[in-house]
Length: 629
Image (cartoon, rainbow, N blue to C red; front, side, top):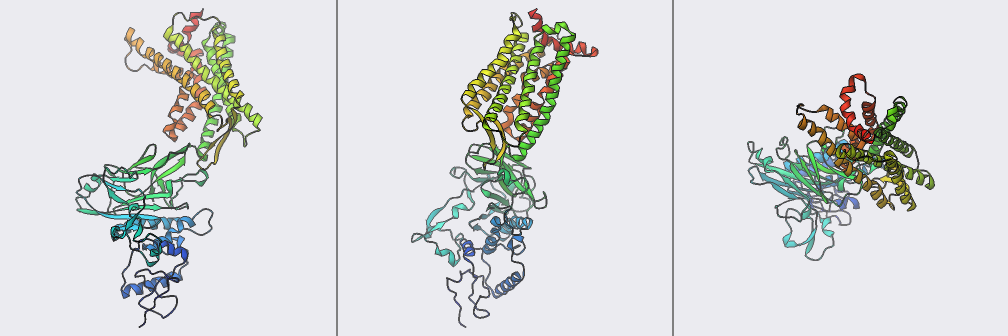
């Protein structure tokens, strides 16, 4: 019987994949699979070979016949289900780029994601050794459950040229078409170092690594003396696979480098780990307004699964992130804007509601002050309530400027935007200044006490409270620092536009006149409030010694004074810790006017039953007035 040898231009040899040829006799011992140029490219890598018996050939023919009778849409996830040779892996991997929002081709994300999740179990069951393809790097290793130290595996991608005598045998199982790569004589390109491999603790040139605790394998000693471990690196591409509900293309959220790291012991049940495993991902410095979080693919969430951080912690460093998780599965780093479109809108809604409520209470504070001046003649000469009202007015106007700034669909003309930015900046500085003057007033009343008389005291405070911010705004405006300010995500998508500082040309003015100014008032107010709290909680017990337990009157006094010196603004320092602190800051800071009204009403408009209980708190606020008279 003559043998059929296909031309290299028509086919690429595929080892023992012996199928019915496209042309020629019905069956010949030597046959080939014919590929398109794109499919041939997928074959340039190690192959997962099958047996070459007659039974295998017959099964292959039936398999091909059945597939021809099915719809040829691989991305429905049914054609290649349960088949993990290199051809089917490469064929299914095309769906990473085909299944996108802009592509009209039908895709079943649930089936496709299940295909890749089961691949790790297949690796362990077949003990496949090493898989090295352009989109997939995997290694299976036999591990003793009686190891003496933690296991480390390198995930660092690198390539090098190796001589023929140095090529690991199990890695380079190529089809004939793969040998057409042009390389120097006697050498071929080794991708072996890209495949996960075990490493030692002192190998510091591999920042991407996995650390598996010894306790993980010790917990399995009762059932088996050794286990098979599969480590997989999967490039999921830019499509919709393994994106889930947490990632949105509109705000540039995505899996870092589109890379998943999978860890599996096959079907061996592994409960929550006593010691977490560690996966270290290296990366460049994060862009502004972006954050990283360690997640795993949770198949129990939603119809197709999505990313979850349950059981994982994230340790951010300059150029790497360490993920610690208490289970085995597919892991990834999610890169998401801290202030994405949805977050900004939520924060704006919270701020609008809080600022609107504060404006009502701040206006009530001013009205209550006017009423008290009318009914209490002595009230006109007291300076402390005047300072509170000045702070209330500046905060009311700041909230009003904020409403005008954010209640727009588009930024106005440059001149109008310049004016709005300057006004917003002015009332922000006035608020900071009056909070600092509240702290100064507390210092004179509680700390210094004696020799605190100043002629025209409130007039001088007003010159500082309203005049100093005006000088700063005039100087800043003369440098043409005001204009359009935008918050961008990673892909330069605008999440919020304001009339504020120019985001590129006036950053130095922003840091000096806003951040620096706030830092000065914050430090001064914090020191004064700390000294006042120390006197409130220590002096009564030291001189009288009759109060035991928690001094609730002192606690309420400190809380009231905290609203005056702007403790709610201090929460801005905690916002780099995460999104939750940003929400806390937005909520409490927008309600500062409510806290000021409560303090003012408690001091100056108490009920008869509360007169005695409020006298102690009022004394702290009114001593300075007495010293002037």
